[in-house]
Length: 100
Image (cartoon, rainbow, N blue to C red; front, side, top):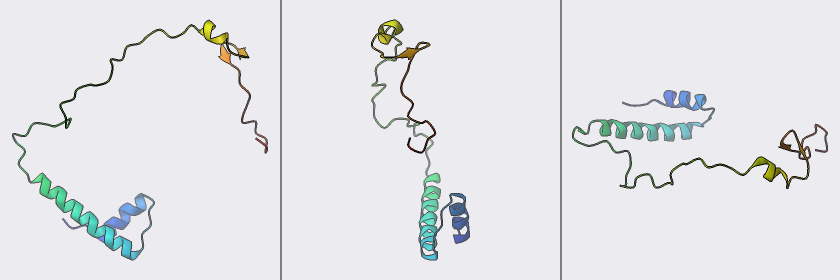
């Protein structure tokens, strides 16, 4: 399957890319090579090949995700200089003025 420069230009425009003629010719050739490689791979018989989801034998190496009770809100709020309705009050950093 050959891909045309017109098709590459169309895909490029969808991606908001602009190419000059030399770049378009280069990318068209590269895309054609990629498509040919994918077609070649699709012809390989993989009937008895098991599905590979991981390339190593490592299984979940992360710790188990266990919910633990957090620190009590009242205890945390003791260190807050200013609060309102259970939330920490902080100075506004966006106030709409030109100086902000």
